[in-house]
Image (cartoon, rainbow, N blue to C red; front, side, top):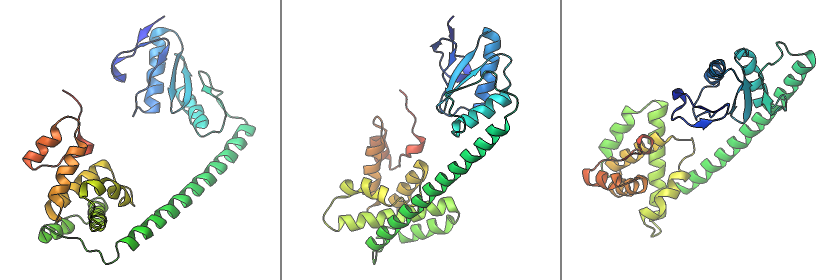
Length: 251
């Protein structure tokens, strides 16, 4: 028996007792939708969510399905498939096993965190050493100071810190005879120590375009690098800055 994917999952697709879950979906909603779809089809529904295969029927208990999905996701069970009828309660042995698995998971998380912090600290030190006695070159220092004054929160302040560091790193590379176009991409990644979003990156470009000595050159490079069609060329003509986090794809 064939059916089509319901509209709440996006464009219909031909499937066979299965549901293809789109990125960004919520597991509890997908479970509920799967159970509802199973009632309409009078058959089991299967879907894959974050690497765990889930099977539900019209009378499956959504809370128990979620419980075992989460247990499988965390590596407690070793089962490739959960549902459609998980046991209502876990045995003492299962509870003990889950607790031991979670303890090991937490140890691994702490180890990954320590490793990450060490890598960030080392990167911060390398960049700081590289930028000793390097001052940002301004096209409009008053505008820069105004930007700093208006962005004291963690998000806006993060943009300012990143933008200044990026500008300084580009200056260091350009002082050796390299062009901005040849160093902007690599230094943008080198400057990203705290972790920035695509929107923050776009804001940093906008800020530097207004304040930095080489900001106009950076703006034009960024627009051409970011464009999907010819919107970067249009932005260069208009004096605007494309934000990669806001781009849309279409005709």
